Length: 335
Image (cartoon, rainbow, N blue to C red; front, side):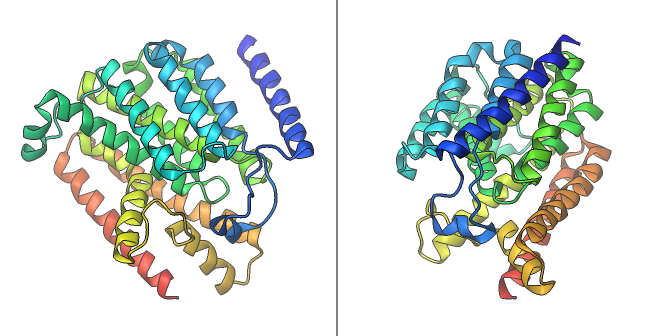
């Protein structure tokens, strides 16, 4: 009962904060950038990440207390980016890299085996092991930021992973109380509704926090237990990670800066396709594109959990995912 009361008070405060920010035109999503125009010009407060940050502190404090300071700095970095205090992508990435490496090093979040001989040979070196884990988390949090372009897509994706956590009892491996996990999932679900209704967006803050905490917990589970293939972890996080890597390769091919935003991500061209092909309103095309991607990933996750220990099975599923992604991307892009 006490936690329900805290959640209700938290959301009432959240609603008040949103109204205050809209009234005073602070921390709003639309700043005029080209890549922001594809889904509408409505000003929506970037407060989702703030609520997620404090919810994680409340429900998962014991799991992150050893890295709480650096985790908080990551939150501040996201907030500073949303407020346009840090406008340089290069500076933002540099700070990200430093913070993530310190978190990985201090928490000894070093992946010891990937079941791939060549990679295992490289990460047997301690320093390279820390760099490898840091690289994975950097790809994930920036990829999470990339997919945060449709209503509900980012938070919906991590809600799907939360379902997998619950189904496989992952919170037991982390000494997280079941009730705390369920209450946090409830916060995410209500925030998902806010996001779908365009009452609150995640912003860089939400992308950094969600990407980091789920990546951190999944790596920690694998390091301490190794009850499943490491490629099952990759499968759960494949979409934001591949979106990031694909975007980098695509921009290099076009001789563009990989850190410069554009409107050519898969979720964006799917939005354009639905809007143009079926003459949908922006809000309908936005929500439908998001739900299509989430449904696809739900199917993939449902297949993946059938054999979580089989590395070959997980690799084949990942390759199929990548082929489907590329085929759909190029077909929609041509349209």
